[in-house]
Image (cartoon, rainbow, N blue to C red; front, side, top):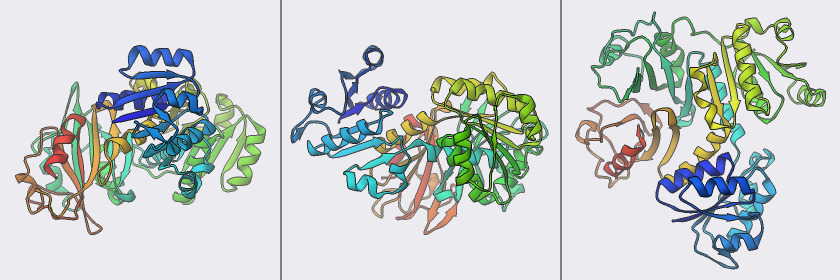
Amino acid sequence: MRIVIVGAGEVGYSVAKNLSSDGHDIVLVEEDDARAAQAEESLDVMVVKGNGARPSVLAKAGIEGGRSDAMMLIACTNRDEVNLMACWIAKRSGVPHVIARAVGLEFTDNESWAKDLGIDMLVSPERSVAKDIEELLEVRAALHATEIAGGRAGIYLFRVAQDSQLCGLPLYEIRKRNPNMIMLVVWVKSGEDSFVPKASYELRPGDLCYTMCYRSQIFEIERLFQPAKSKRLKRVFVIGAGKIGHQTAERLLAHIPGIDLRIVDEDRAKCEKFAGELPRAMILCGDGSDAEFLKSEGITDADGCVAATEHDETNLMLAVLAKTLGVSKSIAVVRNHNYLGMTNYIPVDAIVNRNQTLADVITRSVRYPGTSKVLTVLEEISAEAVETTIAPDSPAAGKKLMELRMPAGSLIGLLDRGGELLIPTGQTELRGGDKVVIFGTASSMETALGILG
């Protein structure tokens, strides 16, 4: 279908690239000459130069006065007024579906904003990023964390430690030795190899394991993979009193009783604002790059540090500094996706990209409309987790998993039956109404969903 995307920044460029590769006819609107030229040179899309909030510019993209050949408009510039106006014009011109990025959190505080403005989806990355950060902090050994099933389960990435009791054990033996522990290793990266493991695969020290499990058992599972790192969260530093810092602080204070939360920023006005809004946090007005200042405030005993200023390079440097000062887990927030692989080269435990988070949310809503939705996209291994509901007339209803012949590179990792969560086995029989989570490569997902009807 034809999709008009307004804005060719990090978010718009990523969405255009993803949807173009899916075979959609993409028209990209961008007023910055350099960004427009880059998109024109590197993407298989049509580029229209100009301000996407102007009717004359949108007309060049095929959206004009009561008629339009576009089925969707996605407005993802960093200016709310442009995004909202572009969506309003598109709706009046007959575009069936419009999506807007909201920079101001107030637009996503209340769902009625989107409804009143006629916008089908109004998204902001800060809340999703804050949730990811909370999970990464609370599950200390996790290198990646994504909630699924309404927070009752999750997908976590663990590295097998040298002293882990899992070393040398086949996966089926882990389940046999821990019958009350509901856990499924859905993907393994061992050296240069990356694959969906068989039950007979023996884990090795250093293996990276994407694990699907119940949230209530996560600390038991964490101790299996990383015995030395499994500790409760007590003290956390957040450097940067911005939107992400605020959202992260709110989540930590709400969900972790008794947490010692310390927020650092040089801007006195921001500190005073935070002090009024977050009375249970300790607000420190100072330089987050001053090692002596941080040590005097207790960072050497901290369980976590989140670097969430407005500058990527500063956040990477601050996360490295915190790690060298003794923080158990340091996290850097970035906007440039090119920095995501830096954890392999610098002493930082995790890097979270807020722009990529938003781009993934938008891409998922286009790729999987209706009853199927992508829960997470794992670019490092080109895999994703998709939730779908088995229809009563599905060809899979009444069949055991072992009878489905799922494509190589995919598996069903979680089943929600009437509110009860199950980690299925090959003998599990699917029923109409079951919600299942499929984990696998992007290339295998279409076939897997087809098998499930």
